[in-house]
Image (cartoon, rainbow, N blue to C red; front, side):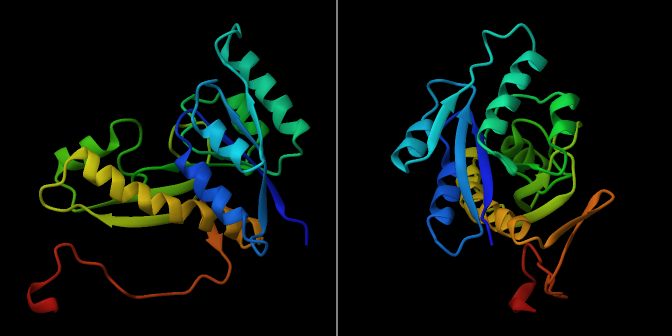
Length: 220
């Protein structure tokens, strides 16, 4: 069976790109990265791609007259790379409805919260300010509304007493590095079906387990 061909879009360090590079290095993984594209020519993630022998390209948004002109150039680059699934991995550009519809159900994103809670920016600060006891990350299909769309994978991360933004962000990022490759695997294996606003995962194990935070006294 042919491996699903990915394009990973980045703007910065590319740590989630690295998690996908590492996953795709396994010959049994059902996807491969065809190209990494950044809107930022100085993105460190481009170096990660180059070291892994992956095509690395910059489509700088700044010379374009408007967002749609930039996205048409981006779309052309994705087509040239024979892209089957676009993975947003710290891509710091809001996408227009034109692009989102163009790649509908072939475009996923990872966000550092348990959506639909805490969409947008400054996520960890808002989680801490709200006194939330659990945070996490979400991989979802992209829709025109920011940080909305059918959810593929979520990972829950405890908020620990004394956390600051940096500590919580590091814990969530570690979960992202596991959640993104899992989501891509499920999609590449054909196990994800979109039903309205939800994803149905074929073969998902049912569990009645409940996570309490804080845990009950005596572990009960």
